Image (tube, rainbow, N blue to C red):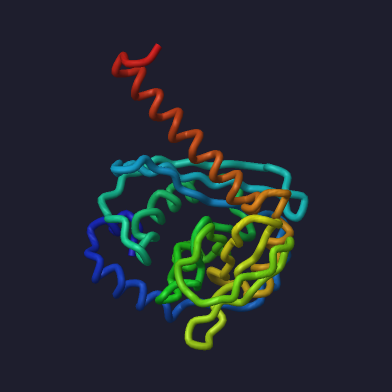
Length: 234
């Protein structure tokens, strides 16, 4: 299904599509070298149908910036827990298509298989583009775990009915954990190892941290541009 049609789906149809895609997920060892990695994020204003998508590409493991891509899209799909991909993937897909250098691995600000139907945004986007993906989320959506120790890189497995679906990782002391899960075409252990390698003194791994800055920058700039056009800002 073309992502541009997502906004025409009902929530029930979106769930049915997730169940269809679920059977195609591959959680397996990534055997090709990771020479480039990217982070992806979305920003939007509350009560607005405009989404600002951004992807930031780095050399890996050096984490040297080598490229960015952005896209601005509209959506009418409602914000519903578990169906985030149907709001955000179309905008991210546009940014992906605008990207000159496609990365070997993409980290998304959201869930991979740590999702009720194993279909978080990272998994959805990985299936759509056939790129290996990791979900690195700031909050838990699904799964049970014990709080990891309060020390850097302490971790705790996340389970759903006995199935390992993610890892809660304390990326630095005295802060809440982040929630890592493979999206598609990468293993659980590799996902955790890659995110650890991308921590640069902040709670959030560098790929999604930089993507977050990028999308907020274009959202603010776009808002200021509209204000100037209306003559409300000088």
